[in-house]
Length: 444
Ligand code: MV4
Image (cartoon, rainbow, N blue to C red; front, top):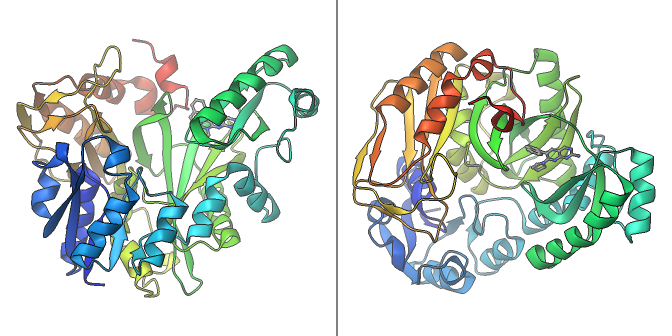
């Protein structure tokens, strides 16, 4: 593998370029009309224009991206996260064009993209799933019957959903009858697939995910967990690892379940198995993300591994050289996401970054895609930077991250930095006592 086209933008494009350079591979950036001046475009060895700013015409434009890869004679395509990263037909098209897609096989992406199929595969493999309705619901009457068997509250989910989209909590027969039709309509409009299923609603859970890596020689490793409970409306805000909520015995169990999950689908590459965990520390499979995640640096800073390098090793058919016993939480790591948004309303706040001063602190890593003068446009995700701090203890990591957030200055646009600083000062956060309802329940 000599030349990699990165089918993404911003901080993740930059992050992938960094590892490619370290591994001696050439990089090709693709960019829309809005991204000409972005740092990642300059930092890549080559750059190809793929279209106007809207994503359907640029970063989701499969034909333009494949044509770009052909024109530069790239060997591989790294999709990053979001955009085309979990698009099975894109992965298939790459393969057909003779390009190595950095990710699992197209059929694995497709199976895990269908939440009901994923659930059924995991159930058969002995991975715990939330008690639920079995298959797809036929109509509202059946939904009510199943909900009564499961017991309210239940969660109505779209098979094609995921990441919090297409799901709704319901507490009664009446509410379910109402929700059923409207949720089905929304699923149809969003995903072009209105298949629905039910699960018992797990109240006030922890959101814990396990990083896994599987090579093409049958070796599957877990790279421990990330605690992702601090989120707002399904947008993650802070992730940390190790989870302050897990004891060693539960950690071993959940990580083993993640390995079982990966084996059950024939996974290859780097991936994440998402679980919810209740206060009794019972955990259930939610979904599997078949891509590199935004929060992967938490795992990297904790273990010292380079997950993007592992992705390339696996794609090049090299056996994983690290062994399970060598993967350890050497440090505690915490990441926050800095967004261009109004800290009061949480609405995206695009505009020009006039001033940009990043903290330079030992054991603080900044993964960003912008610089002074960058225009944050309304066309793309408003995430500006990730700040990742680590320490020998959780307290040390928190201390460093607090310092970093105080020293981070972004002028010209509104950001959520004040909100992030508040979280770091919160007593429940400092005590490691929080669930997915943390932001919602927070006393201001
Ligand atoms: C759930 C759940 C509780 N019970 N399913 C949200 C993201 C997607 N991956 C699945 N999610 C959830 N599924 C059952 N049966 C809780 C979540 C959930 C969540 C729900 C409401 C508010 C914030 C949340 C954060 C993480 C997970």
